[in-house]
Amino acid sequence: MSDEDDLEDFEPDQGDSEKEEDEKETEEGEDYRKEGEEFPEEWLPTPLTEDMMKEGLSLLCKTGNGLAHAYVKLEVKERDLTDIYLLRSYIHLRYVDISENHLTDLSPLNYLTHLLWLKADGNRLRSAQLNELPYLQIASFAYNQITDTEGISHPRLETLNLKGNSIHMVTGLDPQKLISLHTVELRGNQLESTLGINLPKLKNLYLAQNRLKKVEGLEDLSNLTTLHLRDNQIDTLSGFSREMKSLQYLNLRGNMVANLGELAKLQDLPKLRALVLLDNPCTDETNYRQEALVQMPYLERLDKEFYEEEEQAEADEIRQRLKKEKEQEPEPKRNLEPEQSLI
Image 1 (cartoon, rainbow, N blue to C red):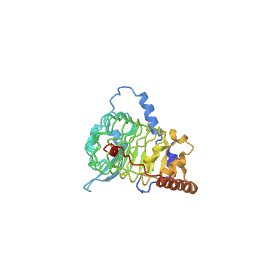
Image 2 (cartoon, rainbow, N blue to C red):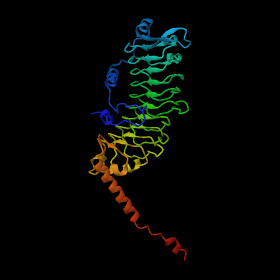
Image 3 (cartoon, rainbow, N blue to C red):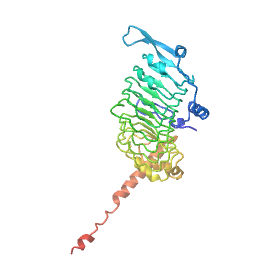
Image 4 (spheres, rainbow, N blue to C red):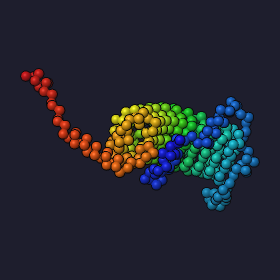
């Protein structure tokens, strides 16, 4: 069962927030991994050729000056390519799909200064580093061998996909340069910390299937709407801040939260409407569903079930009762021992 089901009834308020799959292993990703197991250490050199270009080019458009035309889309998937040097000459390309090859070097793409869309999934890349490409909006480097997030500084980049790599720590993502980045996919890496994701414009963050034990360093993500943390090792809900005022959907499925008292740490999230906690130890508690609503009065859905009006009314009564009990508690007596000792 995938968490695509978890999202089926939930749509964030922001119209431009993407409704993606939660943490489902796609057939595409599984294919990459199966192929990776069979890869030999070395490949016979297979450079991109003019014939391959002729077959893969499409979408004839006017060039920048409007006086000539050029093909701006290239698809050369599954060609066993080890070298794309030829691309240096095709400076008008805007859409490039070089996925499912054996590439280790993307430096020829530095010459494609009109590039809008890049898909380089399923290669043998160890880095996503490129020169700053002024118009690049979507970049996907899924299922490679990338170990860091350095060298990504494209000012119009909106979506960055790095899932299925070997990244241990997020570094080098400069919010002053990545001013348009709203979606980051880091599922299926080896992240041990959420530090380094200081991107205030970010709306969607996917960190499932890593090695995270807690949430930290996300305090400045005031525009974050969707946060996926499924299948990590998180046992505490510390790290969520009232500054995360836009967060609506939080997926913590398959973690290690055992204490229902941890839910109180989510009270500072004013727009949280959907929470997924399936497959955490705390969900075995008999009052789990009620306690979540008592702690978070604006919650509309827990796991796959929406709250009924009766449940909301009962939770409201409990909150009112707890409030009265707290108000009626006698004030603690002041400790006079220090004064007495002076007499």
